[in-house]
Image (tube, rainbow, N blue to C red; front, side, top):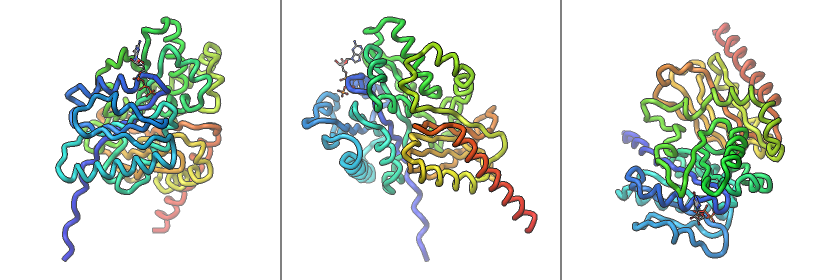
Length: 360
Ligand SMILES: Nc1nc2c(ncn2[C@@H]2O[C@H](COP(=O)(O)OP(=O)(O)OP(=O)(O)O)[C@@H](O)[C@H]2O)c(=O)[nH]1
């Protein structure tokens, strides 16, 4: 007789904390870690440069702070990150209390490889879930950094939460110009303010992505369709007023909503084609789906050519209109191409299902 399958352990949420060099990541992390909500948090730090210092600056008393090997981005750090997460998983299995992981990236990091790592290793996928990306932007230097550093634009574009730091070092006009630029770049992420790292953890944690156990998946906060809607309307206005946006022109984001339930087959095929052919342009896709034949909402999440396995959430939140919502954050790929392709695939899958039902 085969033994009953072992239930999957509750995946540990992982928060990715990013932001350009000196944006205030370590300062904010230190404040957060003092908060009771962050007890039992393991911290992984990816630092750029020969000698890593940040692990010394993060004031942890226990042994759960791991410095990932110096070296930025892609291959090396991915291997280190997987190893660190696997080691941590072993410690959790041995009974070590770890309820959350925060990965602090180097200021120069493209967050995509880190997000991909969280979605590509089977053991990591089994044990952890991405909770969200928190991006810090320095009010004093943020505008200039966004003008000159493509990675900083990417960090802001893929964020689930955007935090403006050091507003004490900028004029109110500078802060509101930065605010508007970030809003245009990423209309869906709540914009927050942190002075000397002071912020309530609740504002940054539990972004609502993939937590299938929560009774009330916070779809509205996670995918604020209204924010995207308003952004679409204001687009011309934004461009007129915030000329700096021209620097961000290669990256853009939008939300597509679908009133009717979507056929999973058509959608899955299209996502596969999109990510295989244009993976480098897909900085991030996230969505809450109302699928044909499925009573529960399904969350999907992708970075470049990788997709996290879809997760069924407990139920639709009360009062939610149950429309499918898909957010795209793209570079050098226009909305019309994506929308046309997706609608065509969905329609063809729907017709095939109708024909099959007619034959049955
Ligand atoms: N005035 C002011 N200074 C701040 C604020 N937040 C952080 N700082 C300072 O900014 C400097 C850089 O902060 P860090 O927390 O080390 O920044 P980081 O993003 O971790 O830096 P890297 O690891 O080098 O990318 C430190 O001297 C902080 O004290 C703030 O809100 N106001």
